[in-house]
Length: 138
Ligand code: FES
Image 1 (cartoon, protein in one colour):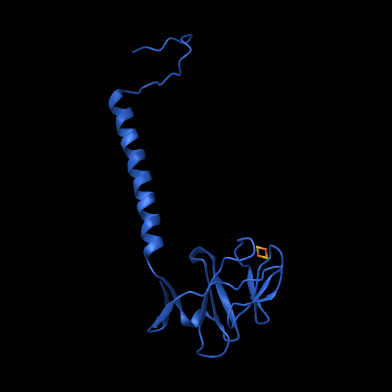
Image 2 (image 1 turned 180 degrees about the vertical axis):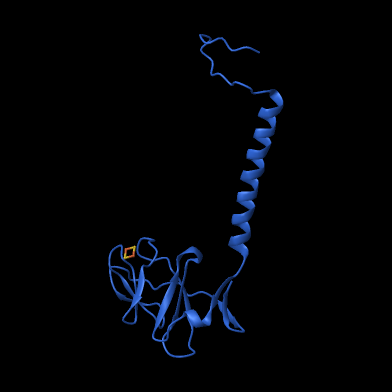
């Protein structure tokens, strides 16, 4: 097929029916693989090395929606990193509190309770086990 320059249709120099079909198949395969990858990540437990969590503080893992704290040595707590006020991810752990930068709420590193508003509800506690030197959150 020869595209006439004034036909009003987009030109596809060198395209064949076969190349178009192969391209479409590759696009579908890439989309499917990306979807499968996300699904696997959602079901796999999050693993945090114990050594990463400071005593008297904590660490935020935004990709896993987690805040892991250690109020005193050996006492691990795990919460969702999603602020119960309006859903921002909490931003930092400082001076015994988990802080949300969106509107200034603060939460206890010990039990996730709101210690400073506007949030009134606590951070959601997450279930976890400690295996070897890792915190495993399901
Ligand atoms: S969303 Fe966290 S304080 Fe508003």
